[in-house]
Image 1 (cartoon, rainbow, N blue to C red):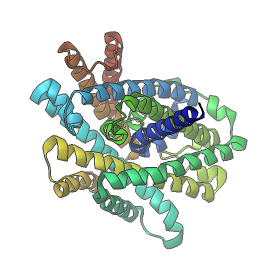
Image 2: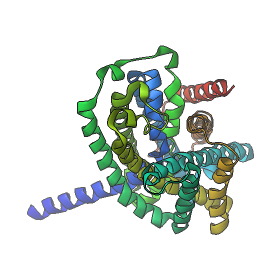
Image 3: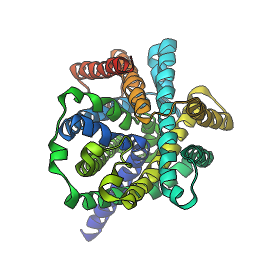
Image 4: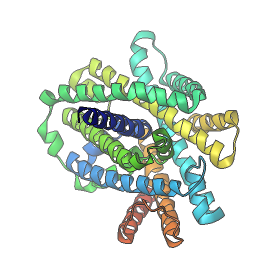
Length: 390
């Protein structure tokens, strides 16, 4: 009996480790620069509205990640988003999926360059001076070099920095508690009620992490859905706590990337502390997302390693050098337009697989009404983003 208990305890421990190992790629990819745009849009709309929309987008993201995972299960080999969609929707689906997928990931990498360099500068500029542009280019160079390490390096980086990030967010929340202004958290602005949606969809964008999650679990594919739930839940809690702390302290002074406004309420030291959090987060996310771009080019388009790396890192840099440097515009457009388009083509591919009876036995039986509602939400995000751009 004692031996059986030991085996059960050992099995449960291994299962917990596997769950965390599976959730880690999702957290490392999803939690990036998007988190630093959320306090601003939450403060503009109202924390209450933002929190409600966060729950909606988290549930929608979990649904689409699960759908994508089921579609991956019916494909052989190391396929990624573009191949999965094109196998169901043909050449036209492949074209749309390519534009949406690579556009959203390159947009994310561009946002990481913009804000990662700002964080880098916030930390080092008091010591050595310099222009923010130089720090942004330096951030791009260092992160791009690290991408050469491939998937193994990315997993080690995630294993090291993600726990550090959790601890630092917890410390920030504890510091914020005695410095909160309840009126900042309860204020609402109905005219901006839909503002957080685009930034939230960007902040939860993580399609590229689902294949990495499945591969990280190895033979424990039965834990895929549980790892997805764990990953999305932890991301949602982190976002809610971070916005709670920043909006509660800075309110109307909340800046676009969350850091500058802290100088008004707590001085430069807290701004530097949050910049360190930001640099760790954005660096991990840049390497994770960049690695996903490389893997898609390698597996879906049969690219070579170095040429795939070169394409992954140079296109966002070119966009940055040609003047795309407005953080909120980048994450809003990337999330609302391209993220929404990724969601739509994925839902259509899922319905195609259902009609042709290709889904695996363990597939998530998503009611067609829920798929239709998700389709409407993604379409609404695209339309709202286009209206906002216009």
